[in-house]
Every structure is written in structure tokens, then in C-alpha cells.
Image (tube, rainbow, N blue to C red; front, side, top):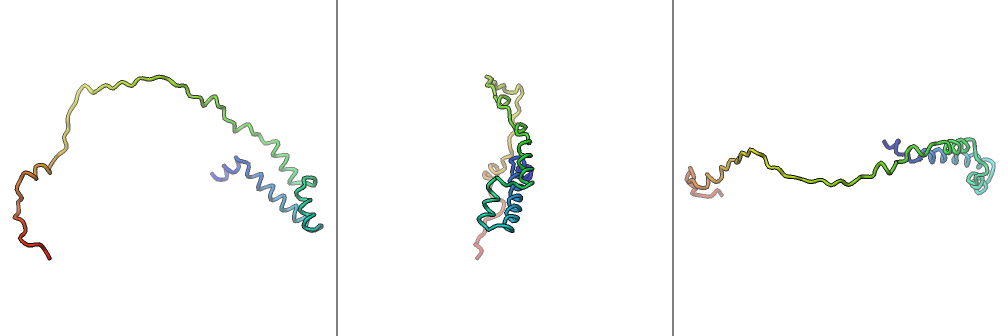
Length: 117
């Protein structure tokens, strides 16, 4: 799922471009100083074959496939009326209430004479 999200947002192009820049920088460092190699790598005037392919593929990629038609998301408001209709037959079901009965009766055992301890 993460790969799909990254691919949909174009992160794969960033990863490929980073690989291309790293390769170009390594190649340029073999023949030039650090400052000159960095300048030559990122000036855009000396792209490598991978940079050219990335640029070509980015332009040919269809970006309109993911567009959402906002008119499809418009919701129309419609009035509705809620009418409560009670059932025609009604049966009352009571829960058992054993505690009320036990409060009115005397305890079946005599209370303890001593507390433990």
C-alpha cells in the first residue's frame, strides 16, 4: 500500500533522479574537484542518459487519469419528513426483579455473633 501511494505521488521519480545525480556526481568527482563536480552535476546542462530518460518519461506520464470530476460529488438537498408510527400490538416484558422481593423477607440464617479477627 505504501508503494502504491508513493508511486501515485511521483516519489519514484525522485528516487530515480537521486540515483542519477549520485552516479553523475561520482563520475564527475573522478575528473574534477568537489566544487566543479557538484556544479556540473546540478547545472542541468550536462544530463546523463538516465536523467534524459527520467525527463522523457515524466512528460509522457498521464497526469489527468487521477483527476476527480467535482460535479459528481455535488449532493442535492432533498426535504424528507420523518413520521413515527407506533406498533399496532404492544406487549410489555418486565425484567425479573429478585432484589425487591429479598428486601421484604427476613434473612434465612441468624446474623453472626462475632466478627472474624
